[in-house]
Length: 69
Image 1 (cartoon, rainbow, N blue to C red):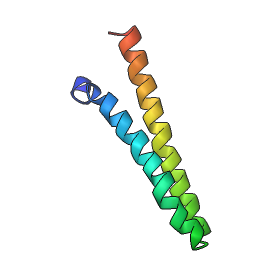
Image 2 (image 1 turned 135 degrees about the vertical axis):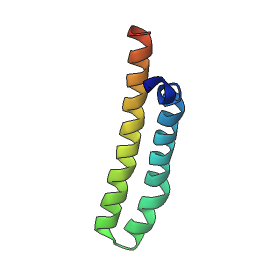
Image 3 (image 1 turned 30 degrees about the vertical axis):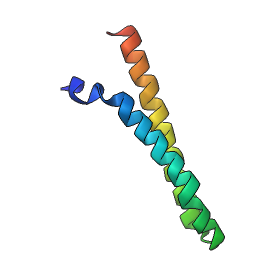
Image 4 (image 1 turned 60 degrees about the vertical axis):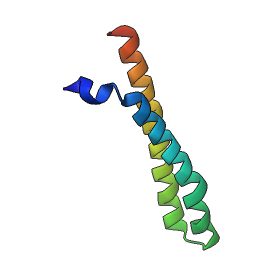
């Protein structure tokens, strides 16, 4: 069951990283320009969460491929 999505983990990690960077680049700026502090903080948090999830998934896939299969 794990192999069904694990083979796509490389693509998923890239998508996580790209969407996180897109949120950080395009979503935070309008909130800060309008002085919407809480919304900008949430957008930053979600963006960095996506980037971190992508990096962790990439590392987990690398470790799994390197030492288990």
